Length: 349
Ligand SMILES: CC(C)(COP(=O)(O)OP(=O)(O)OC[C@H]1O[C@@H](n2cnc3c(N)ncnc32)[C@H](O)[C@@H]1OP(=O)(O)O)[C@@H](O)C(=O)NCCC(=O)NCCS
Image (cartoon, rainbow, N blue to C red; front, side, top):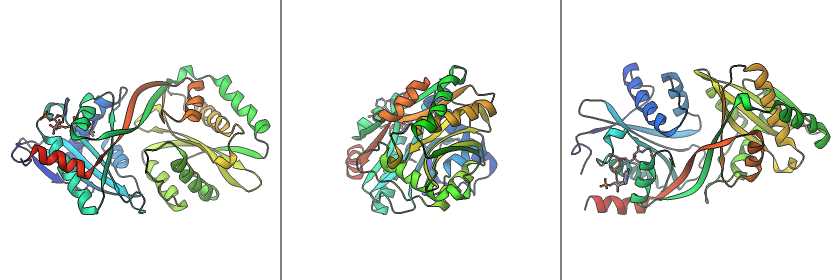
């Protein structure tokens, strides 16, 4: 059965070619679906949506399903990194508006994604489901996919942040880690740290828990700079960087950002320490430093959010000490293209 037989139509779209009304209708649908997933969701503006769906370093295709009344009712996105990493994987995001579910649209979108993977010579579809939307997990089981890694999405109230504990982590820094210093800056990364930070991004992707078989992508100083420049279109950022004084190399970092449209929510993007510099309290030092700076500068903060793999003991230890508590769980999932085709054949013999 085709999407037209279901009373819908499927269109590929280009974010730069859409007129304002068409883009806003897609943003409205995306906000409706995000509100279902995220307990404290605040709507993205069209400019923010454009920023978040268009991150540098990815090759993307996007599709929208329209109803016969010409309203967007479902979205499909596929992407893969532009550096040749993970050549067998294709990332898929797929959402159907609640009132249009269980009519076979998800199945048609899976067909579209599996066809794209086949054309690209990729054998595995990857994605994520949330425990706040039972339909995602149910669909995944029905099609024969599996969960590979759970991430806890956690938050704390800024009013509950323990300033004394954060100050203690900073004060203990120089004693526990002699020969290092920590600098906090706002906006994009200073030129002289870009080489070291590109290495840290690679270390982060290499060492944080990831599903079996997933490789880190390549990070160049140019990509790190472009990545930050991109996000600074709609966010502010504070970054604490630990510098190994003798070599001048970046040894670790912790970053907080806040959306201009939602300044009350601080989002932890990354905290990482290079393994060769671990075990000296640098993680706590950079965490403490960036939080103290944010408390001083971003005085209207309400919540802080972070996401961690459940197997990341080191990071969870620091976050639990700060008072973070789990709000919901996102599960990384994967589905072989062969399995997807088997399911599709069973639905469409
Ligand atoms: C997952 C999602 C895209 C499925 O869209 P959909 O159009 O409802 O999917 P389909 O109608 O093609 O469902 C195919 C099969 O999946 C299973 N399924 C889907 N939703 C289900 C639910 N809520 N409960 C039980 N089974 C379900 C059924 O076996 C269904 O076949 P059936 O209706 O003939 O029994 C949609 O629920 C959604 O947008 N969820 C939120 C976003 C998300 O989690 N996306 C990631 C998906 S991996």
